Length: 308
Image (cartoon, rainbow, N blue to C red; front, side, top):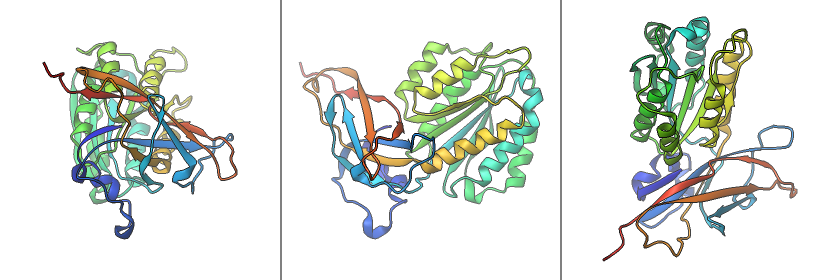
């Protein structure tokens, strides 16, 4: 996640996870890269309790100094994007129930909003703090909003989700897209969406709901969108597995480490335009074993116009 702003605004959500006496102090102006890192062992179990020294960050081939580190649960702005087309009719009830349960298990300071999309993208739930939201009222709103008819404009839905997440209350941004992935109504193209996704700060999780008999849908697109951001893609085989997918996403969000660093600038710093910087994170356990890591693989560094 790339964040460039006054530090007091940039890390407001991040610092809320630190006890006041332990909050680090930085210069008033900083260009920080913030990464949310999922760490697992070879058996797929989340690894907790690691400290800063377990992490190595390589940015554009150069080792970086980690300036901020937290193993705590950092609040996020979370957008849930629900396919509202006819293909979602068999999944409607379980998707609604799963979104309500997801709300109930979210971090209390998380900010959540819900968009639905068929031929049009609509705001089904305006941004609100999870701990202040009545689950019954939220569930009733989902039941009214998810009508499961029409065609699918998932690309348009994702673009709107990215836009809203970027203006959210927290620097950590998450989107959860639930669809069969088969777009047939968007104005935007897949190439346009892919470019916006890679340039954004959001982590995308996807739940691909395809008919096991007809195999309609495009789960490959769902997987592509998630991997580009360091997220994960789920493909439930049964209707009942949808709830498990939401539970897995909630656990992944809550288990992530958050690290931040001021990247070493390259010799091309005077060049105009944007530069894609590749990021790699390596993590070792307390006994020195390499662990499995998932995070975004890079970001775009904006360049100032060169002087004439």
